[in-house]
Length: 527
Image (tube, rainbow, N blue to C red; front, side):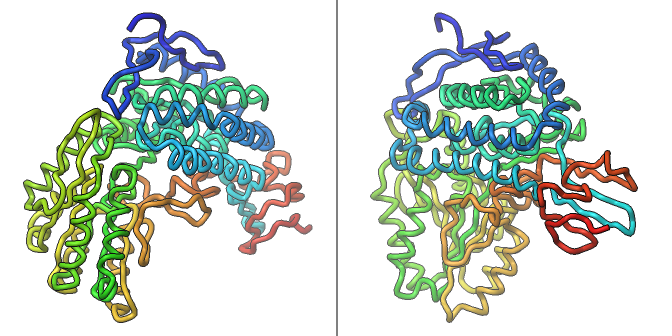
């Protein structure tokens, strides 16, 4: 790697990193490294970014929400203006389809999240202002007064990026500085996004260290950073092993850690849903499993199908679709290795390959799809092993002989982001019972739908019980709810009016919706 590495963004300046190493992006379609080198930051860069963000936190906490909204909107506009260039970079670094995925879906989603965050900032109701006049108490959610560290995942180079995704938008909306840790699978995309964010930040007049980017750092540096009490919170999307290690470090300093780690997203097919519809249902299932090379956190990793003729027909149809599907390009060598490990764990637990080859292929980081099957006894004997996440174009079908056995399997499910129940009117009573059993085990419960696809909606829950996430009561998608992860509950007890933020003042000048003596209202406080 000759020449200089790309700069890092620290304290409002693009500067050479105090690097301990360098890396380059890989083209997953060919397996070849390309482009400029990027620095692996050492402790010096991390300390500089953390110190700068800590200094900026009080000023950003006090910033006019209108300035925050203008920044988010200007950043969204900049992304739209640079859409073609961003799409081209992200495609080269991830091999995700440029026109149909990155340009048509992911980039608009990124822009939408930023704009929804701006809307929530202006409305201010995300702060949940609450007034109890009899007790003399007033409370709201406010800034943490500390920076937020955001780790983005490998599979969404735009919509979940540490410097552009929902975690980023949420933390900034709550008026916290963000230190974004870029992803080594798509560093050029992160650099391009950071340049746009920096321009929008300067135009909005917000503190220079409100947005910072470090392209990469080694695990020991990351662990030390997560354990630093100067952080106010951490947002993480990635593997369970990495997330749990970082959470353990954060726990040592009491820093809230909002991690999305892994999920198998169980899907149940009831007899009525399959009757006369095996081909249709199999197409839905295979389409969901193979979408994006199976590299979605909501991929249906476990499908429970009844034994019998309709179930056999469904499996046969799904097997044909898996067998005909081409090899998928994995996002990186690491993803490919993790997939191979997951498949081996499923095999060792008794899963049988019934379609496809489930193996690495050439060129680049490709993997041929595979459909596995296991019986209910095998699942009940090794439920944890048969819930191993195989992150890629791999599906597991477990055949259940009766409804009581299905209930027993549901009782052994670990937490997931989603759970789906396919049923017909003839299945109504059992569908209700299965939905009741799934409800505490999933964040989003679906009826007659595959789980892939997460709407940017205030009503969305993209979270769930452990191990899908580390903080069940929160969603990483959907404004204003996602903002509340990165906020502190503030209470004033018999405080004079001059101490109070606008949301809690008697006048309520912005007509924020708030709860006054148990009643929602957007008006001023009488008397």
